[in-house]
Length: 177
Image (cartoon, rainbow, N blue to C red; front, side):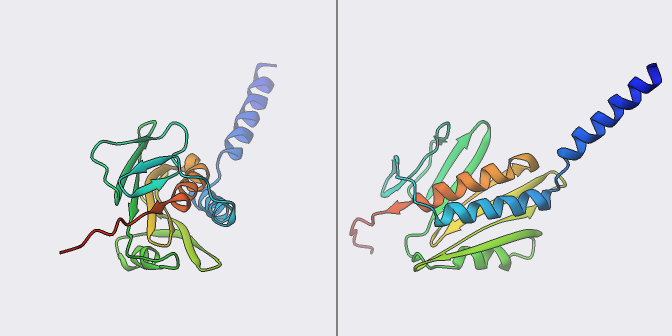
């Protein structure tokens, strides 16, 4: 009896582990698909301002001290998200996407690109370790990055695309000298 019970418990554990064993690559693919849905969805309304930039800040996210309108550092539960805004790049800009591929240090797992009307967007992941990746989501001249554990990839890419798609940047006509 004891042996049979142990076997059943072993099989149950193996089945549970198999359910959780989606690879980093599978999670990345799911996340990129999800980010694509968000890219084409109705944009979230901005609820936060930093200087000339306004954007949607999801519940639980905090803007860190020292953020400025072009480099906004968000934090949630110990994770850091960096939102970078280049106001000189248009909605169709591929700059950040091209830069991702230009860095030979990046071990790119997968990227996805999205186009809608006159807008270009992308999402992707580069490998950090077996369990961690660096995620990036971009829309025109805006991008957001974070480091993510495998299990959080899909949720993170969805949220990141919601944030990056919501960015408005009003350039107050300041004379540049």
